Length: 333
Image (cartoon, rainbow, N blue to C red; front, top):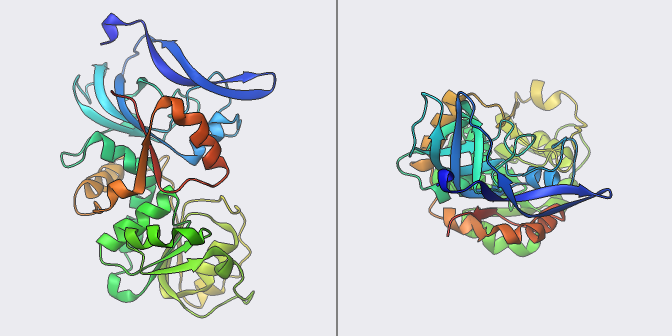
């Protein structure tokens, strides 16, 4: 309990001689302000944005020392807000957590109460972090896609399918009865993707080398793109009439080289997904769906669990594109 300790453990990233180094430190508690909550973190998760923060990317985190971790799930130990009480189980994702506000790679987080969502009854704290921001992003993408595209309409492509958002999107869409085409650069992960529920695999190199024409043969009724760049371009150009494509990432490139033809000749809809500032009332809808009718039976299969001491190695693997699925950080013994 807080009153028995003056410090807690956290993975702190510090700048030393121009290099950014992460290590486990003892950190002092701050005074809790009005409308803030203090959460004892049980689980967090490793995201690409965390890896950037841990490596000193000033576009993500401006000031160091800093504790990354854009996701956290735990139990409120102190509350100065009417929204929550001590003992409530909550999920905290996105907003400024782990960016310029110390994040979930620590035993405790102190955040505005408005950032928290009450843990759904049918979800555990660990499951919440198997989802995390990646799951919320996948959930928002699925929500928007399924508003307009039904399983009988045709195949749904998912790019970056072995990543956190991609893997969860494949699993959720499969649970909902969609026929999923997984797009990946990792030929060795075919079995992994098929176990998640993909019905077909397309290699990234294949879709990158599609014809340069402004419109291509229709292949997909819709898609969830997590990478951007030429892959997103070719997905859009290969989408059926009145199809829907969501986009949430730019790891391949933030640029698109397209004509308007897919939009004005086929009526394709491109929907941007911003999970960082997604309105709370819709967050609650998505989290409750993820806890119940959207929860894939393969959820545990999409993750591996680590401890604070394992973070440096996993961050290095993530930055080099060698992680698959979700990496969950356990902060309770």
